Length: 255
Image (cartoon, rainbow, N blue to C red; front, side):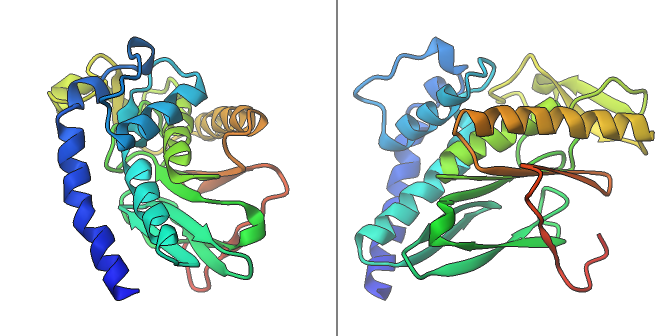
């Protein structure tokens, strides 16, 4: 298996280089794109993931980390792996053969905070991707959630959906600072959107509103069959969907 891992690792730079040549397309909102035969596989996966959400403001870049994780995971399965966990900066592709199981940690803050809860998963859960988006993560957000963790059939789709749910946790409140995305990052794929740059201590009504909006969007995406569950964190408060989902606290976690 070590040899197979080296083979898979070797094609990652090539895949990255292939996407670089198509960044002009990858940074456009998906309704402006028509898939072309020349698109690399990773871009096709990214485009399919954001298109499925129906949210016209999303660009394929909303699914880039998850799509790369999926490609690596699938390549390892093709070479005989029965349990694969590919963590691409917090966006995880899972491949569990029958009889395999794992535990996935849920971080209450995007950007590398230790997990406060976990979920046990087996092959029968049908989860192929666990992704996290939110304030302080690698991507810009229009919402105020510290983290939105999404479980879905693949990482690309979960990545797009966690981005979307995080964006929907927006609320008008004096404690929230926003700026146009292009002022923060001139090369952003969402230059004209106002993104969150800071959040002070929120009043209870603002936290409740943000959590409810995130829940509603998660429910919509579950009803579409795009994801199976979502966990939303806002300043120490948590909301889940579906209601029966019960994350298990990590012993000793302060959250």
